Amino acid sequence: MIRLALVLLLFVFIARTFWRAFDGILEGLSGRPPRTTPQRGTHMVRDPVCGTFILPGQAVTLADGSRRMYFCSTNCRDKYRARTA
Ligand SMILES: [Zn+2]
Image (tube, rainbow, N blue to C red; front, side, top):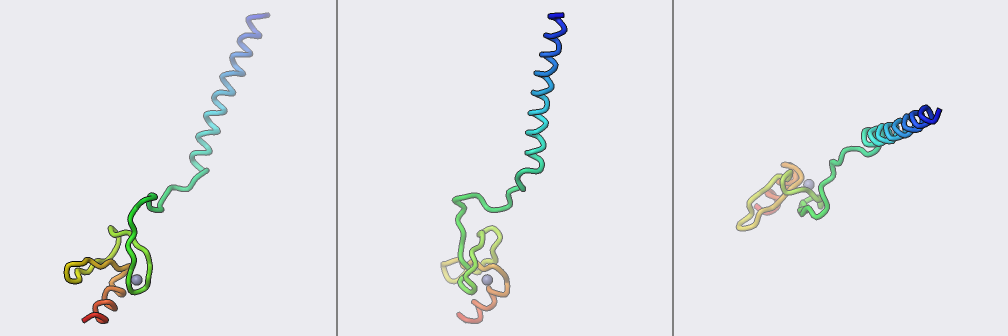
């Protein structure tokens, strides 16, 4: 009888461990949405035309003399170009 109790105890322990792991997997799957926002500390540049902050890697660039200007779109770049030309 003692053996049966031990097996039962072991079974409960295993079941609980499995359930906890399963719960963790579920939480990982549905809990947090994937991160699409840029990481903290990423340097953002400002579009001088509309004031939008953009990532340099996604920005439309324009060489203005020795400086490099960043824009959110070709629209803004063209506006800036027309303004300064
Ligand atoms: Zn813009």
